[in-house]
Image: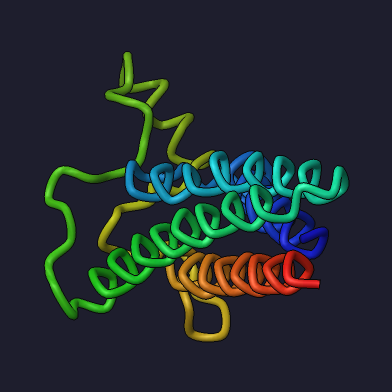
Length: 159
């Protein structure tokens, strides 16, 4: 469970790093893909606390909920990555940015500072995967770690 927590924290910190340090302004779907981390990581902490108190059954149930949360996050990543590769149509109302510029001068200033991320265009690919693709992989891995944790706790209940 500790690996699950640390891995999830590393993924969400990386997303925030690309936004705050790298200047990648996330689209609406990108922001929605962060929600499973905001839900799943506190659930993981709860499971750790429950397990440390010997409450393996409730901890296993919390981890099963965590599996569902991260599996949903992986599905969102697959959906967006597929739209980026034109496998299917993505959302038509999704785009990056924080609204219209207040003036032409501020628009020119902002052009150099931010990369606007569309939900259907990969802003960056690393080893062939976009941010959404990597999120699909990471979320699936976290779901698998949560499932392994739940199964191992279930084994501790039987002992």
